[in-house]
Length: 162
Image 1 (spheres, helix red, strand yellow):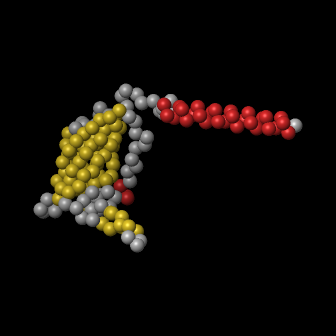
Image 2: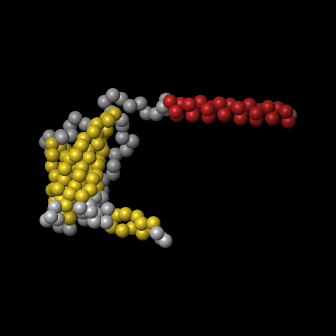
Image 3: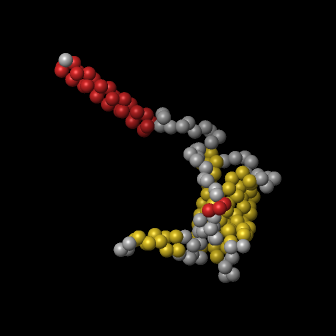
């Protein structure tokens, strides 16, 4: 009985190791990964923002890149969580209907962590900064619009046709 129990345990250990080795090989080769279709693409938009002498922001679309791939999840947008200085990026179709909406934390006044005796967070004021967004490619998306949240509401900063 003791020999039978040892034999079954040994067989079980060898079998589990073979399964584990097989699954590791599949992970390395990507066999278990979700297949990326030819038409699955991610678009990256890279922006530069500068503060003018009159404390108004000027935004420039620096680059647009399209790569094959699929977004795992779409960024969640909640307008109630927006703070003064944050940007709202809206991607619209030709008729002006919003397709994608994302928020960007105030790029000109980021919160930086400082590690000294303790960890503290300080807001830093910058004259220029860069930020980017990404979204799943769609032929319907034709324009990008960026608004800044202010104490008295939203202010349109940038509009450009893609």
